[in-house]
Image 1 (tube, rainbow, N blue to C red):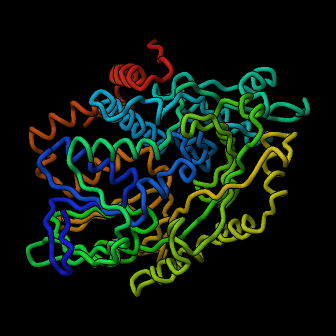
Image 2 (image 1 turned 180 degrees about the vertical axis):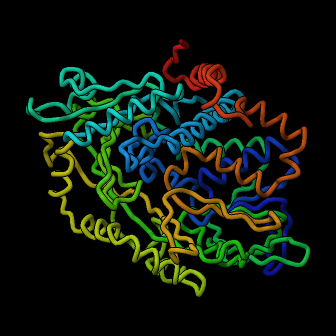
Length: 504
């Protein structure tokens, strides 16, 4: 346990900052790979998974590039680039394998508490976008990872797929959609809580809530001294660790800066907030059973792709539309309005200014979104549900995201849409910055971190054997192996109680 004496230190092998899906995933990996590790987790809030991992704050889609059109951009010559989609769907298949292993080892009471089958659909209107969607479908069908995806521009078929979307539309309207049964809905909040409960009960991991990390300092022996404030007892404590992971969501940037590692210089963050329209009409909720994604507006960040989203939250079916982007200077939903100002340093202010200049469409888009009234948001919903009425919906505040800004030799600074692992050269500290697809690819992200920071162990026979047991496709590319893809999908869908996958 931690010492209650100021300036005293307690030793841990690993300290994880932030009690979200990333820290939970890394802690499980480390305990499964090396059970004798002493691990402590520090969380500033009074419960785990309260920020980006919470079901109401997280997109929840089980991002696998099945319906997200921003992962399949159109090239200048009109062809569709599916390279990012292939990477993301492979990463999600890795997540499913990891979770299936954990189900078999008693981490969950039932997989349906956190993952359920939900069809994934892409929906577009207008001749140009219909043509794009048809090309996208054709391009994705070149990979066995996307087999089973259907395309249609026939109103009667579309009405069977998404009845409330097709009601009250004119016959002359050009519309099309793709649909695939492979999709899932994931409650990352419930997943995270289950992982932490098992870690505490079965692996003796210590989780300290209401503990905020204030500073990090490395000594000449490459150990990290982490100063923590116990906010309940108003006591400062210090722990020493051989390895530190900063997985604090939007709070990670500030802590990375405090670590003073050279690899963290030049990084900045641009905060984006959000809102959902949440359906209150149970009859309407019952009629819709799909995640229907549209095309993002010009300049919109990936997290703001509009979608009509069936969710399973705490065992109850919900229907959400959005998210609508906004701007806040907070880096966390329960953060400070001074977060953005305090994140500015001599190393990142120029990259941030440069990224702002190069992303004026994003600034314009956010201003427009902030100015939207409730009625304006309902009008946006009517592109998906033509007869939507205001009384059936209410606004809910979504999570806070921080987009990565990094130094660039040519541009000065660039805005990165995605996640990035920053690790110190000595492998003793790593931080995760960024947003979508984030949680859905958490397993692959943490594997990347392990390769960067635990190189010798990852090369050992013991760890390699265990990783192959946990993730049968470990070290292989599913996109290159049809037989392996079918084998792991049959296993994961049976264990996770997802829709059956037919083998050709």
